[in-house]
Length: 72
Ligand code: SF4
Image (tube, rainbow, N blue to C red; front, top):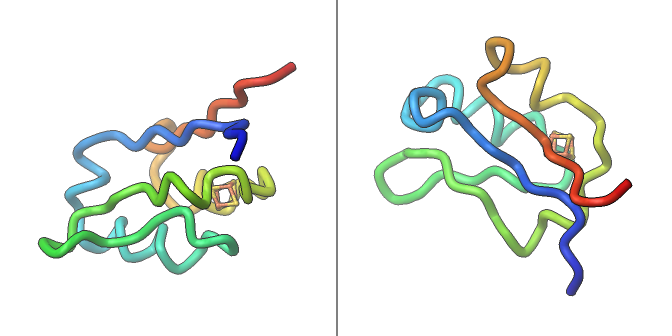
């Protein structure tokens, strides 16, 4: 399946349990998940479901998550 966006998470945010949990909660299409050590991981299979809602950007400190569009 085609992938139209890439989500980048600052490593400090990805390993911050509280912020990681918040990201998992806010994304309506489950792009964020926790791995077995409660570190944030990106569900690559769900990336093309991103609605560009920006909820993830609002949930964390500025710049720690980036949603990069791979199309014009
Ligand atoms: S912009 Fe919305 S849908 Fe896309 S990753 Fe962030 S929270 Fe999820």
